[in-house]
Image (cartoon, rainbow, N blue to C red; front, side):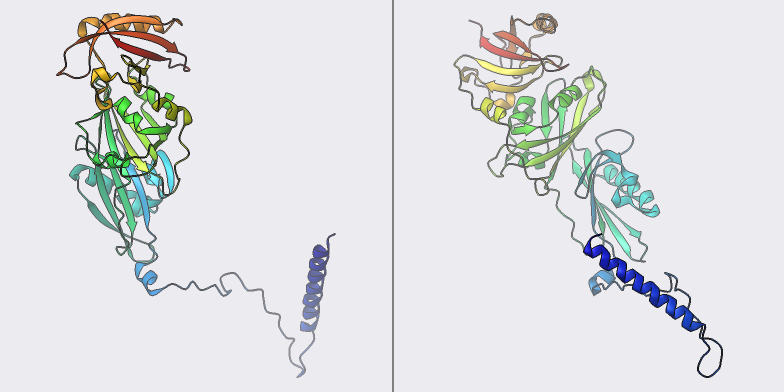
Length: 392
């Protein structure tokens, strides 16, 4: 045995000896010749003194209502769900099991408060009694998506003296799968470092150009594919340093809404930089962003199954097209030719050349372009490196 163990053993032995001596002494009559001195029974935990919790006057007035916060998605579907619960990230979790809805009364009234906020599009407030007799104030504030519909509800709970934080760290977006154009809320634009809205939307490649790292790209491409049964996606991304903000670490969640041609992807974004600083940028993405411009060539990455050009590497200056509008559209008479090329690329390994009429906006004329397409294996979602040149 160790010396420390020996000392504890000796202490326990001495304590047992003292207890036995007290028991024997209790059987001896008192000096006055009366009855024996009774032995006090061991007190129960309920009779033992308890440690007093000292609270300030302000805490006593608040009734112990600790502040709580949650981020609720209302992107679509029968029930809203929790995406952020305090400092913890969630993935479409049950609202009734969140910390902000703890308790029978709160679990019943919080979903109704969220429903009212979504319906009115305005701030809604409710007061819920707590075990201490005080009232906990609940504030639901809507975050509108680009279409004017409530995509997110920021929910606070606590004493009414607690401040309600601003929604500057929460944004929303919607991506039209048919056009490949994403509409961003003003708060999302600011998180990207853009102080002004540049046009009425961003192409998918332009949106991703503002990011220098991210997770689960394959899962995101699955969500953008109408032929898959994937309904939602969750991931993280880091932004490149913008004009007004530094690099940010973002938590994103997206959900597919609608069917076939009417299918859109709605999503929310939450800035988690204060809790989880942005990791280093992906060196491969940084290297691709600094490729030298090759005169006469526009090079990009295309998801073969959806035909979305999600990453533009080089833009031909002669096209006079900004990244925000670089979303090639195929002439209706040439779609069959492009579809045949896609079918061949799914099973071919050698580059394929196709010529089609392309334009980048409705006010531009159709221009014949030559595309050299090289298939790149990427799991069950093959990609295509496309080199576009104007056909002479």
